[in-house]
Image (cartoon, rainbow, N blue to C red; front, top):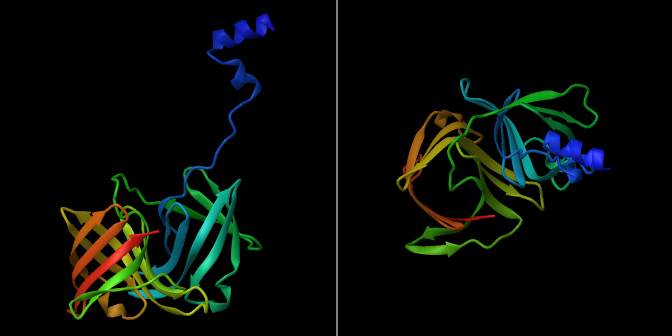
Length: 235
């Protein structure tokens, strides 16, 4: 034992690390990823995956929900799907291995895809999952209590997606997303996909924004010129 102890000291090792090596933990999936057909956004516990072509102004589909990831098993509890209403409320299971890139394969599928992380070096107060909880109507803020029918926004540090969904019925009302910036009280987004009106792809809109703790107030004009004044809460 003395010989082993001396050897550990010489090599700069502790006996605890020698006998009880640290278990390898999964790295975070949080952030934005280029997929084979579009973009995936991961918050710490929610994800969205969207197939689209900004160049062709074509939206093909989107799905998302809460997830857990451990020991190469990615389990998604689907909350919305634009192409498969019956999938809502069910689970999707993937084998997901992260080294430099993310190898992801749905259980039962033949081939794996390779997703590449989008570089996002700067921190951002909006990164995460948000839900609209209030809107200005006739000069007064109308509260929007949490319910199965809801509008959410999923943010990485540089990319966003909103979705109007119903987690109980599976109904999907629309989505849009792209890139965004938040700087000096100004929130600016540029659309790369919009399920309701592809002609708006490429448009940039700026809004006044105030983020305080878990609340975000958002005001300005929509792409149609209508006034927007909303309150969002981080989930």
